[in-house]
Image 1 (cartoon, rainbow, N blue to C red):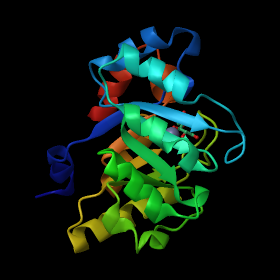
Image 2 (cartoon, rainbow, N blue to C red):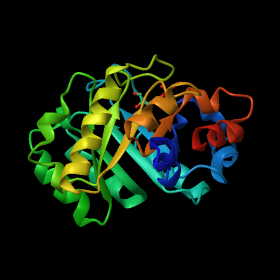
Image 3 (cartoon, rainbow, N blue to C red):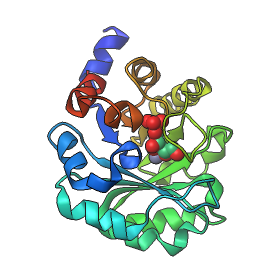
Length: 222
Ligand code: DX5
Ligand code: ZN
């Protein structure tokens, strides 16, 4: 069976990031992708872990009220322990950065105890090998393909190496963690990410800056 066929058999999920949506019309923006997307990606930034500020649990709860899509919350904050319970209440996936906590194992267990999927996110410079002793505990790895903080940046090609290495680990160990990729995903880069082994595509500007966000999600789903 060709590699392309294997991709077709795999379930590919798309998680549109509202970072690039019209935040003054969030409910209408989410409606545009509701019938085609798999999640709504919530980029939480604190002005410390990343050089930008976005929204916290209050806005995320407002999004939750206007959609049936599950929330995929990406915490780009220092001291994620302070907010993780709030996001577990409303999310199907909570991603915490490897670089943001001294006690990743404890934090992952705390998320899973709430029956929420615990993903660990890696900045572009963080090697996947650092996950060796936690990979069996996580539900997914979020590979950052831009430096976190802003939408509309260019895809960093080395992310593909990281996705491939994670996919190899998955094959060799039989573990079933998902591989999510975030940053610079568009009509060109998504295929590279899928070929490397990604299962969940996060895209912000490509979807919400397009004339037709529904069609943009469909393009990513192939
Ligand atoms: C970046 C965020 C991303 C961002 C992606 O810090 O984590 O989710 O919204 O935006 P695009 O798709 O425009 O690179
Ligand atoms: Zn994100």
